[in-house]
Image (tube, rainbow, N blue to C red; front, side, top):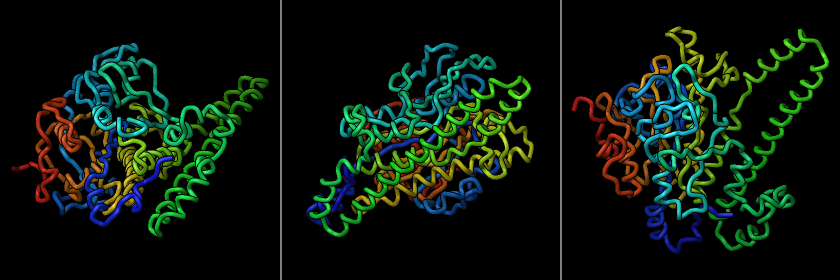
Length: 452
């Protein structure tokens, strides 16, 4: 069980300062499908003097730790209609090949996997890919693409999407349990903390007060995630068993009653709140970064074209994809914005967790780059221009945060990726359609390049 950085691991305050400066750099992407309500996304003002928009309001506690980026575009995502050409190459900056089969071809290696190739050998897990929806496998006949393209943003090769974990328990086990221990039922059923309790007590007896407090906080965070995973798993199993039992009973009844039952089940399933499942996954990413179990992670809130129902959000009654096709109807656009707001609340949750994790004189958030975004602007128009993007963390003080950067229209998104690769000291001449870093990221006085 790996530990976060402790003062006992350093010999002096100067060593702690040096350690903070040389702390590992992490990268994560949180992907939101189906675009945003464009009328409620963009902040007012530019540079340091900006006001969070209604949708971005949950980021108020980390406003000084983010960069809101306006008018970036993924050029190679305009090669076809619909969603799939925008989600699959979100982190590759390439054009995908149209297919209705499993012969996927995205055209490049994704940003996260390039970073994992560079830093993954320093950690037990080179990268961690998570979601809360299993990949979709149908063929979307409306546009002639396999929906598999809508289920992946991480590509280890131009033809190989990286498998995502959707089960919180299995994701947790990847961080804290070896392959052999997960196969042994008596060890598998025990808390990971119970397995290391003696070692933990011996360690706490040897460290100072500050480290004891950090260890207590760390162990409590791990215990909390374990408990929440168990509760969430039990809740979802109960729902599945209850539905299965009811279905067996209903088979004995008439067709008319079956119809009523199926309608009731559909209504129930459409409104299930998956907030806790999402936050468990985000906590797993946070623990992975804090302990240096991994330095690279991706999380997809849902598959592109996801019809997940958000009726659990006050003021929303319907599926995400359906509402994103709002046709400028005011009530639908209001619901759309509330769904976007929910996604930003989860992003803010992760950033605040990382900000609370001290690492020498910095925080884990300081030593991270946490990208939130989507492959399109307005879901109703399937617009690839002016993507909704927020960057959290300063990449180890390489980027100057607390600003809204407004760029010239259709500035390459890949210039941002070029700069992120540079922050990781990964030599690259060209990424996607860009051969240079996005300007202004390290310039405290910059407001972007618009009007320059």
